[in-house]
Amino acid sequence: MKAEHLPPAVREAILAVLRQRTGHAAGLPDPLPVGRLIFLRDPAVRGGDSTRVIAGAGDSGYHLDYFRRDEHSAWHARIHADGREEDLENYEGQVGLKVFPDPAENERERQRVYAHNAQVRELLRKKGFED
Image (tube, rainbow, N blue to C red):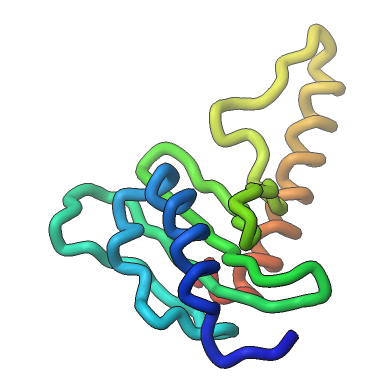
């Protein structure tokens, strides 16, 4: 399935879900190109959040990958053409780390989360979602 743009009906189905996830959904271009990184900006929305998206087409159909960041957290997910959402690789520890009675276990957990987040950061950087 190779396309230059998402079909209009697919774009509308994805847009309906995206509206629930970000205030910048109105900035989604129409037509929506496949394979191009887009920074969504809606001038009517104020605040520190940002959303970046990439539409894709693959063996499982059309989809939109998005990365939303606000002042408190970040989220990486995929919206499929049928409206299903799928969580993709995300940062851990955004609201704190697990605390264990053993300080050595706390350190192992901190190192595990740090290593995981470094891998996620690199994946997001390759997609263009992180600088």
